[in-house]
Structures are given as structure tokens and as C-alpha cells.
Length: 132
Image (cartoon, rainbow, N blue to C red; front, side, top):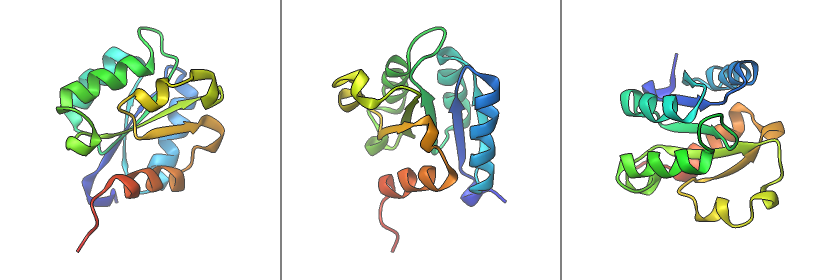
């Protein structure tokens, strides 16, 4: 059963990796939504309103930084403004992107080899207001 009906949008152009991350999402108790490029990601986010977006940096149409910028604009600013939590992923090291990660509206960066349901939950917990 999905946790509070929240969904996670996985944006990854490699269908096998997309499905693998989707399995982590489902095991963690969330609904899994999928997009294979940036255009699909923006459209799907508008339709689904996911709690979390796992966003590959390297996509075929435009990169994850541009997708994050468009998603934040669509949500009115950032995750702090009520938009989805965006986590950038890559097989490359975060230092390869210089300051682009820190200046993006993403909540953070996660190397693909560290993706897990627990890691996704940590990003959501860190970005959610404290429950009373």
C-alpha cells in the first residue's frame, strides 16, 4: 500500500535502470511513476504531483538541471514552496558538476550506486515539515 498515496516520479532514460529504481520506490511503499526524458518529466509532474522526483542528470532532450529548473518554476519556486522534492542522480561524481548541483532547485544529489528505498525516504523526511 503506498504511503499516504504519495508517488515518486523516476526520470531516467535507460528503461532498465528506471524500472530498477521503480522497484526501490515500490518496496519503500510509494507509487512509482516513470518518465524517460525531460519533456515527459515536466508533463508527468504536472499531472501526477509527485512527492519526490528522482532525476537523472544526463537525459536525451535536456539535462536534469534544466528539468529541475522547469519543475521548480512549475511548482512556484522549489520544494520549500510546496513543490516536489527533486533528487539529482548520476553515475558521475557530484564534483564533476561543479556548483551546478548547489545552485539547482534540487534537494540534493545521490550517486546511482547509492539509490535505495531508505535513501529516498531520507530525502523526503529531510524535506517534510515536522509532524505534530
